[in-house]
Amino acid sequence: MIRLPIYTENPAFSVEAQTIAQRFNLPLLTELPVTQSDVSPQFILQLSEQGLGVHDLSKQIGRVAVDFASAQSEYRRLHGGGKSQTLARAIGLKHQAQLSVLDLTAGLGRDAFVLASLGCRVLMVERSPILAALLENALQRAQQVEAVALIAERLQLSHAQAADYLTHATVQPDVIYLDPMYPHRQKAALVKKEMRVLRAVVGDDEDAGELLPLAMNLARLRVVVKRPKTAPTLNSQSPTLSLASENTRFDIYVTKKTL
Image 1 (cartoon, rainbow, N blue to C red):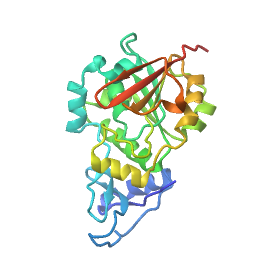
Image 2 (tube, rainbow, N blue to C red):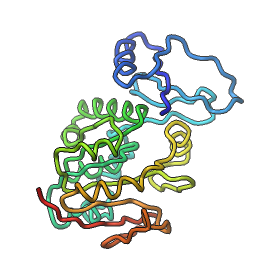
Image 3 (cartoon, helix red, strand yellow):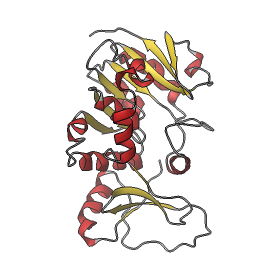
């Protein structure tokens, strides 16, 4: 598991940087490493007035962060299609006003935020300490922004391995959501620089196939797997139904389990 060092050049954030380092077991830098602009990307987590972000010391790739109050998040929230968008229909919001969703591969939290903005209570599970740190910092900042504070309250985060979480879960969510990252996948929700950074510091979700049967055993209503539109189904297992958008397909496995 890759653990990037965390650094801040602003003394006002030194205590917060130390807290993040301790919480996610990350190295803490007191000085910024010196690199040349022509070296390969070398990443650190940097804490500043903008919040926590992944910073490329080689300056080949720009800063990558999670910001639930960004203009991009606001645009998708206001103009993304509401409950008629494919993600919402796949989750099952057409039939129920509110659902509890377990997002096992939270990533940058974009789909989780959309679902929370539509009324779902979402628990994000993220194994990477880097992404978990970014998500937690973003949630803390979002809670201070009036426009998204109520949405942020419907989001929770667990830094854990998805398989371990499923094995020891005591609460049965309505829906379990899987959006694994695979080798050579073109993920439309991410711009190019973000994909490059995620692959460099997180890697691919090679255990995604192991999660599907565990998820189907736990989910009360359905498991939803997000896939590239032309990709094979996970584990070659036929879904109950599928919904497709321009570049993405949602494979839906209906479970309808109750405790």
